[in-house]
Each structure stands twice: as structure tokens, then as C-alpha cells.
Image 1 (cartoon, one colour):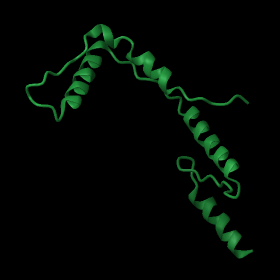
Image 2 (tube, rainbow, N blue to C red; image 1 turned 45 degrees about the vertical axis):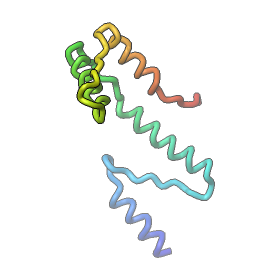
Image 3 (cartoon, rainbow, N blue to C red; image 1 turned 90 degrees about the vertical axis):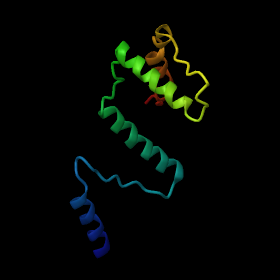
Image 4 (cartoon, rainbow, N blue to C red; image 1 turned 30 degrees about the horizontal axis):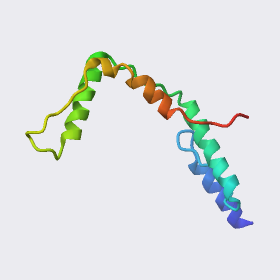
Length: 106
């Protein structure tokens, strides 16, 4: 029918490699959600994301920025506490463990 031809033509001409369309049926909630999750997981995996390597000087500047942001709204007389360098060693591994996605096997 003419409507379906126009529908397919629109997707064919607007979906690109860098901005693809994903046509997902919405008549079954669990399937819709599973299909959307699959698209997201595949895209994230294809991006090959890695945690940045942060040297000690950058860690210290990040900790100072964090302390400054956390102190906003405090009185000027309140101390700003910046943890010593020894406490910064566990920052990156802990972040990796906390953010690692749980993806079902198969």
C-alpha cells in the first residue's frame, strides 16, 4: 500500500551509518525492552570504551576540584578536606567495579 511504501522510503533515506534507525515493534513490552537493550549493548560494545589513564597530578587536581565543589555552600571558616595521595590509589579500580554492566550470557 502507498503508506507503507512512503514509510519504508523515509527510513531508507534517513537512516545512516552514523545515525541509524532501529524499527522495534511496541506491541509487546518485554520484547520491546529486550530489543532496545540489545541495540544499546551492541553499540556500547562497538565503541570499545576504556577508562582513561590518570596520572597522580591529574588525580590530585580532580580531588581538589571535588573538595571545592563539595565545599560550596559551606561557611568560609569551615575547612576543606582533601584526602592524602595514598587514598587515591583505589579510585580507578573501584570505579570500574561499580560501573561494569551486567549482561546476560547467550
